[in-house]
Image 1 (cartoon, rainbow, N blue to C red):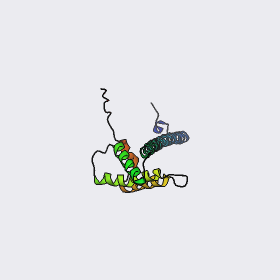
Image 2 (image 1 turned 90 degrees about the horizontal axis):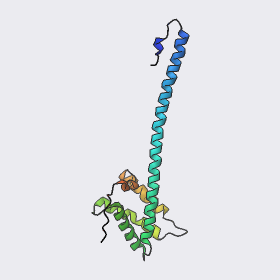
Image 3 (image 1 turned 180 degrees about the vertical axis):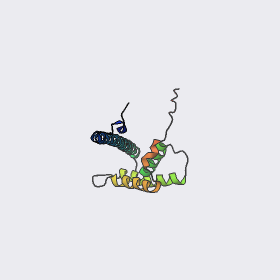
Image 4 (image 1 turned 45 degrees about the vertical axis):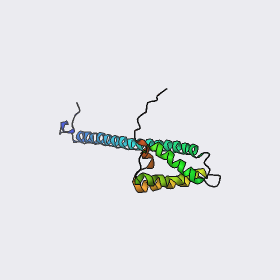
Length: 156
């Protein structure tokens, strides 16, 4: 059981003041720890999100590089990129919003197809991500957080 400052004898005002300072210090330490833990949790969440988005970005761009390999021209590369994105996101139906995303993603596939020492797809990917964030108020990479159930493998 903890002693309250009011339990100290009134005849010792210095003792009362000393105990009051200690009590204030323990309260301040508890507040500081609580604030730190909240900030640390927010920072850890932000870092985990950044890591997840970096992995998703790298995985999708690696798959995109494979999908456009052997494309004869930029138009076919764009189409292959759109098919890949549609498949990765599990989009089996069309909507205006999805069509807009696919249209805006096509330049990323083209930039990767045409990439060379002088022109890299970095700017195209960044422009796509910025457009998505500005128009949808969330990161494009958040789309990959939906749960896709495992489909059973059937051996014949």
